[in-house]
Image 1 (cartoon, helix red, strand yellow):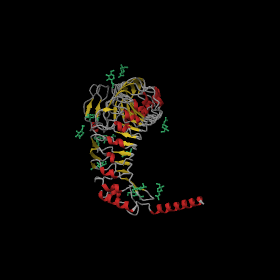
Image 2 (cartoon, helix red, strand yellow):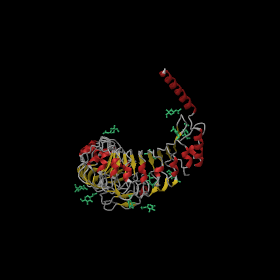
Image 3 (cartoon, helix red, strand yellow):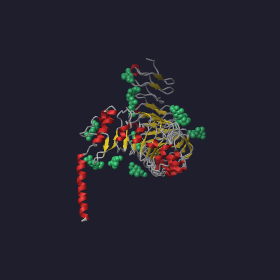
Image 4 (cartoon, helix red, strand yellow):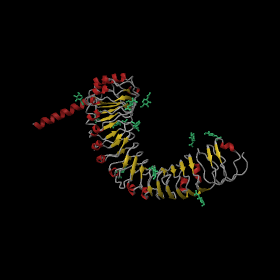
Length: 510
Ligand SMILES: *[C@@H]1O[C@H](CO)[C@@H](O)[C@H](O)[C@H]1NC(C)=O
Ligand SMILES: *[C@@H]1O[C@H](CO)[C@@H](O)[C@H](O)[C@H]1NC(C)=O
Ligand SMILES: *[C@@H]1O[C@H](CO)[C@@H](O)[C@H](O)[C@H]1NC(C)=O
Ligand SMILES: *[C@@H]1O[C@H](CO)[C@@H](O)[C@H](O)[C@H]1NC(C)=O
Ligand SMILES: *[C@@H]1O[C@H](CO)[C@@H](O)[C@H](O)[C@H]1NC(C)=O
Ligand SMILES: *[C@@H]1O[C@H](CO)[C@@H](O)[C@H](O)[C@H]1NC(C)=O
Ligand SMILES: *[C@@H]1O[C@H](CO)[C@@H](O)[C@H](O)[C@H]1NC(C)=O
Ligand SMILES: *[C@@H]1O[C@H](CO)[C@@H](O)[C@H](O)[C@H]1NC(C)=O
Ligand SMILES: *[C@@H]1O[C@H](CO)[C@@H](O)[C@H](O)[C@H]1NC(C)=O
Ligand SMILES: *[C@@H]1O[C@H](CO)[C@@H](O)[C@H](O)[C@H]1NC(C)=O
Ligand SMILES: *[C@@H]1O[C@H](CO)[C@@H](O)[C@H](O)[C@H]1NC(C)=O
Ligand SMILES: *[C@@H]1O[C@H](CO)[C@@H](O)[C@H](O)[C@H]1NC(C)=O
């Protein structure tokens, strides 16, 4: 009997909820009225013009059983009028996205009345001024708060510490020039995303209390005047996928645990004053991007780099690294961008570099590298940037680069290259810069150069090109050109600089 009653009840419920959902796939009447008032108050943004009682409430999220509006998603509508106070009369509002609008003035305290709010995105507007000290008056069930890319100044108020349910606190790219409550933020143990980057904060260290944020996935603290060392307290942040402390004044060594964070995908520590060696153990196998450039790192590039099978980007430029580039780097299957310039690296490039990945950028200038360029650099036909100047590379320029028509920039000057420079390179449409002087290249100049050439030429012999429509700058002094100047210099009409001193040209100037 009891079972029977429950079954009836269940069937009734099913019927009831069905009919309701069919009749109200619309915001309820009260909320519709409010929505239309908000729209009017904002001078009827064009994107909201389809709003009507017959159906399309674009940007409005509502419960399709009760018709209660739960969310407003209005990014990029050019809204410039203030947020109206009665927006919070939508009693069930849990999320508001007003990103990429043109809202101005101070923080909109009218939102304090939206007591169910969990998601607030006011990023990318033109808000200014101090954040109110009583910002805790916002809903305390707030989970995602994004004020990024505005012009807020002063301190980040202590009150943020009250939002105990917060999962994202996104405050980067403002003009905060005071301090932020490190200890209070460290108490927000539910945080998964924390960004304070790109603010002119008063100089200070990374708060040790951030080590309590063990659910953090993203910690973006770039360009915010950080000083001191990386606190070891952060070693508990094992969920991190992004750790960005770049563009600060941090010092000391990079702790070994940094290279052992199992979930880490992006590690940006560039432009600080870090000293010491990299690794040497790197067991953060999920690393995709590793940028330690512009520090004072010494020692060699650890062999462990070769185990980072997901690595696409490796920037170690402007350090004092010595030793050879591990050969395993040449086998990394996803490497597309490698920049190791301005170090003291020696030895050859990894022999198979470019063979196993879609290598696009190779920049290793200003080192003591030697040997020949690998024939495989453009194996996967993606290479566009070869910057190898000021090294001791020798041998011929790989003939395979003559088939690499993605090339845009070749800077190979001041090495010991010899033999013919692959002539086909001159005809590549993408090519804009070739600087290959101070080598022992031989060969003839092409008779036509049709790209925006701005570089310097090698020790070529042969005639001066007779046609070079786009040629603007032709510097070939101290070479061994022979032959005469082209008769018809009008084809070089755009030439503004011509320097041929120190060559062996004959004939007269036309
Ligand atoms: C509602 O209107 C918007 C804006 O005009 C449009 O992009 C969207 O496709 C419409 N949606 C429906 C379900 O008609
Ligand atoms: C109502 O919402 C539920 C869950 O969000 C969804 O699965 C369903 O398709 C919606 N029904 C209507 C009529 O929109
Ligand atoms: C909507 O808000 C009212 C009043 O605050 C509340 O009683 C109700 O449970 C809420 N409904 C939903 C679906 O959140
Ligand atoms: C309005 O905001 C958009 C997106 O943030 C921005 O591109 C645009 O320049 C702003 N317009 C004015 C007049 O400020
Ligand atoms: C603002 O931050 C929230 C929470 O992390 C995120 O969901 C949202 O996409 C961000 N807004 C923009 C415009 O990136
Ligand atoms: C922060 O910037 C504002 C506006 O530029 C300025 O008035 C204020 O003095 C600055 N505060 C500090 C502590 O530098
Ligand atoms: C660092 O702090 C100084 C002094 O408060 C300030 O002038 C400067 O803009 C800040 N720099 C950065 C990168 O935030
Ligand atoms: C590398 O990336 C792939 C796919 O993007 C992913 O499945 C894998 O877990 C990542 N990590 C390692 C260590 O390969
Ligand atoms: C590298 O070391 C030399 C001397 O050993 C020093 O003068 C130079 O500043 C260092 N460069 C960097 C980027 O640390
Ligand atoms: C060019 O070759 C000559 C003779 O072999 C050698 O003396 C000179 O050092 C070489 N120059 C360069 C830049 O390699
Ligand atoms: C040459 O330069 C001009 C202007 O600097 C540019 O518009 C044009 O696209 C360039 N041509 C090539 C082939 O890069
Ligand atoms: C000079 O360059 C312009 C474009 O940069 C091009 O349109 C013009 O044809 C060139 N002149 C000659 C004579 O080649």
